[in-house]
Amino acid sequence: KYFFKVYVAGLYLSKKTKDASAIISADEPMAIRLVVTSGLIDSENFSESTRDGFNKSLDGKTAPLQKEIDNFINILGSSEIKEGDTYDLWYFPEKGVTAHKNGKVESITKGLPFKMALFGIWLGDDPVDDDLKEELLDE
Image (cartoon, rainbow, N blue to C red):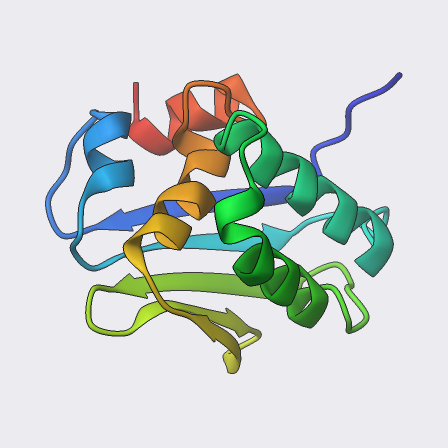
């Protein structure tokens, strides 16, 4: 099985920290930006890998957030994905996670638990990519 880098990511915080657990649990504004760098990604494998990421982030215990996860994936994975697409995932405590694709709001998902699960995809104990986690934390 080959692994291809299909996106680059950036983490935006109010104050710099290398403490992934603190970032995940923080109820304060922050964002992750994903820029698609490969034509190999499509809506089907995007949806599948996002679902796998939530499963890893939540250690398989997705049931309490399943409705939010399904809605998020169904919306973001429903349109064509192409190289150069940019996803901005902004969290604001009073609003929740607002997902933008190429500057357009695609979905809003309320609640800190969802934000924690989402950011855990990249920053959790079992992230989708250990090297990416290190780079996001600037370790």
